[in-house]
Length: 466
Image (tube, rainbow, N blue to C red; front, side):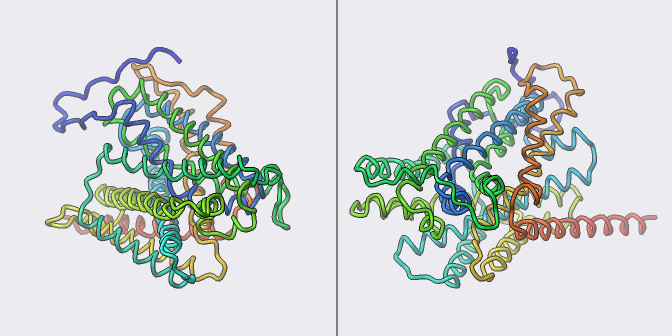
């Protein structure tokens, strides 16, 4: 990569102050690591193992590689356009189609809702385990809905996010995963583990090895999402064109290594069938590896903290994105309403919470439904479609020559990224269950209806003008 020059200062006379650049390399790295860590690895390790058996490390490894390739496209775009807007900005610059920009933006918002819904179910399962409750599906559903109402209350009250607080949150999330690795290592060193399971493929009867690996990778990718959120911090990062590439690669690399180690430890310690049947797989691993160690009882609460953080961040993102689209006239104006005293977008917050609770209830009421896997898979489905669009956008925007030097992803990686992302999206290659497409389709239809209502209302208002 060529030498990278610092970004140009904001234009004078713009009338708006620039955002304060507070994030250096360390804080940016912790932001990326903290955003990736969370619900995926804590809740879905067992489901991934259920698709491929003991070789659960393989889907996580493939998901890591796919994320790394797509990250290169994001790095070229964020160092070329160091602005806060992410995928929607890049797609709009590349194609200039408002309908496409809306779909990308709404898909990102929906991914936040499905991710938060998955986190709420995982939170409920960990709470039941942590307090030793013999809770059935109905009780878990009630806890999950109650948790979403708590997130609603916090969101309505107003949450001042600080990147320094993210240091604490990341440390707590990371401590749980390191606990799994250390206690599993102790169990393994004592000769109690069965490493033959780590290389054993056990696929469902209706899938061959290749399709099973594809399905497991599609699910495991949920654990790698989050790195793309960091590009929204470009305007608040010191010299983003220089430090973003190093910190992005380091963050994805750290989380990728941790995920592979955790998945290897999990299947070596716990039989695959038991792991896949658990809604709190890493808690099961720790309890098996160190049944007499009191620290094992802490993991359900650490897991609760990790997934709660994921849910809050995603609901904040979803509600603010919906509010922004309404403010721009893309969605009905009632969604841009701001509370008079709290100064929070209460209409957008209420709308996204209702959708999230509806999703949790709809999926939970289906007998034997793997709720977290279904919602997590829908999240990865939506984001992989967005990633495919970003990989294409980086090639289209090569014709837009800017004065500053920037990261270059080359010509091959964006093409490979587009193909791999689409492969993991399409139903005949990804092995995804139909339920993920149904949920994604329903959410996008809701978005199109809202967009059509806003467009129709705007036309009627224009027709009434003299």
